[in-house]
Image (tube, rainbow, N blue to C red; front, side, top):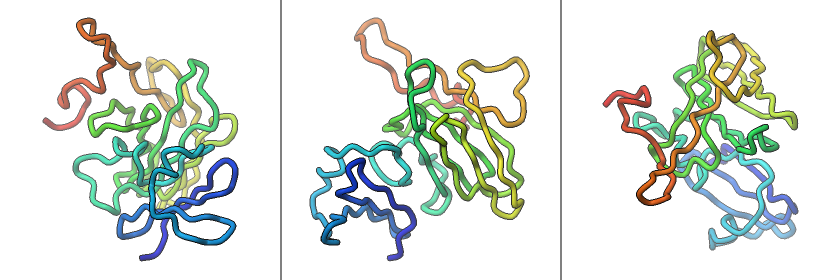
Length: 187
């Protein structure tokens, strides 16, 4: 099947590809040899996650998405002022969805952001963590800046961060998300 997304390891020795039929493949760049063990993906350092498929993006897949609904993801290039990393996704519902990185659970907290009048075709963070998103049929290019606290009135072009992780006092374990109805998702 044809590839849809590519990303290189920090050292440039491997490239990961995602394809239309939901395959995650790893290749050696020096020889073009396909690696049959995905442990390379686990152990390699990826400077900025941009593939829609993989362990760090499991939570980016909403329960009502099919394989074509999530069009692009991009991890922040550097930690935000609070030290957190984020990953933004652009989807067919005209939304920019922001998660804490990695989004490794299907019930991760998220921030839903609107601005496009059509499907979002791509998202990318620059080195200053300014996100640029491109629209499909609306032919728009929008710049978003990351704000740590929810403003009183959301201004066009700002991304609000998802709520901070919560620690459960009886276990000391950080909870992944509140019940679905409290996250703005249909129950």
